[in-house]
Length: 295
Ligand SMILES: [Fe+2]
Ligand SMILES: [Fe+2]
Image (cartoon, rainbow, N blue to C red; front, top):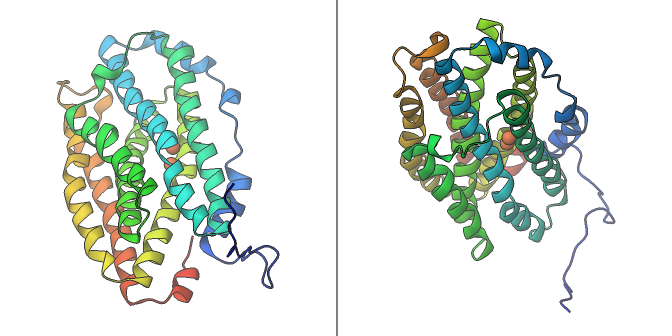
């Protein structure tokens, strides 16, 4: 049996839980906003709309959904090493937030599969829809960078994992996809259940990404040299992440639903830029200042 003799527990200590720090503020938000049930989304309008769509329209929706489906499953599978790392450091407030994070990813996985089963009725293997750049990030970079924490949970590996997971997969890929998808459904007034679920997912994702911004900022504030690792990781992964958009549009001419590639790409760039400048600021900030950041 392993006994941790130098254990310091937070909630029986003098200060108790710190409700003011960003992860705790996110935890309180998650308990209010993250409790929606994928089983309660009404897909009856979607089932009707599905019948009226053309083959190409159906194909593009199934393709997009196959990316979301595998993405949500992967982030559910790959989050645990980060939670373990945070738990071993005794950061109870952060771990409390991460319990909501993992549960939400599980619900996102459930939500998309419910749409596939109950609206599209598709039973074939969807993995042929996964393009090369997509597979590079979701099949290789994401699991490798997260699972590296199990043998080496150093700050350098933590920033690599968080950049891959929170900044690239959630911040660039998922957010861009949700944004474009939501715009398409809203503009064409179709698939109301899918649209409703994606609205809820986007709200959950914004908390996940906010946590990533906090984590990276906290790590950079304690060691500014980590910024270089973040930049290098971003530069390596940003191009394949954007390339997924090109690969998504490539099989179609014209693209159904009047989807515009520029709309996807400029959204991705803006989101990315905003967050990177926020994290870069942490090089000159104290932990106290990081703890006051807006969430
Ligand atoms: Fe998700
Ligand atoms: Fe997420």
